[in-house]
Image (cartoon, rainbow, N blue to C red; front, side):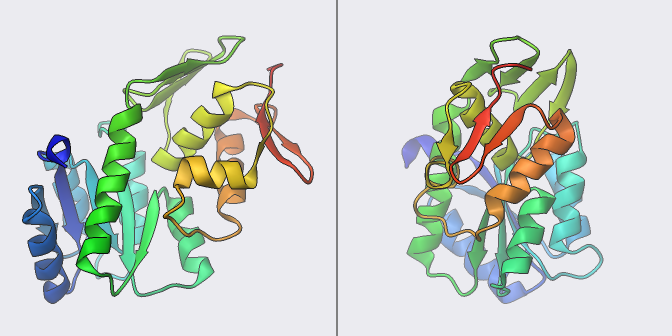
Length: 230
């Protein structure tokens, strides 16, 4: 845990009791904690403090969590944080909306303090362990810079949400290899994360919209592969 101390975490929720509980639970573990009571304030604070991780409620006044997440992901001046939605809405459609907006994970209220800290440590440790890995495609048309969370397509820089980035990095690490859905979910989302059936499909669709349909191939009944011929 010591190597994770010093990370800044931003909590965004319109319920004072939730903010107080989360702040106390997380701060006593050695993290720097900032709070915001709505999405608009959360976006503004993100630009000021550059947090490593944001825990973001979905239903809030002014700007809801989905819109706030989209605004953060579109801000090219930000070092993109991990974004986790915290909400009492457990329906599949809410999870899909969150992942489409660029969220990395999803926590359902109420949550036990130990489980919350374990989730935070897991996300930050995964981020720390891989942040300096670079991967190039064989043709050099797509370059993946893990430290900066940037990809370059024919010299044009693109910032991806964290899970889209990690999914692309996984597929590009073994061009031509077919990764099945279970492998992708285990490596990119982790065994401690429960996500909906359509989660991978949503992220693949988003990557194709940004990179072109030919970059990632679907192998029917098996999984996905990074194309060897771009």
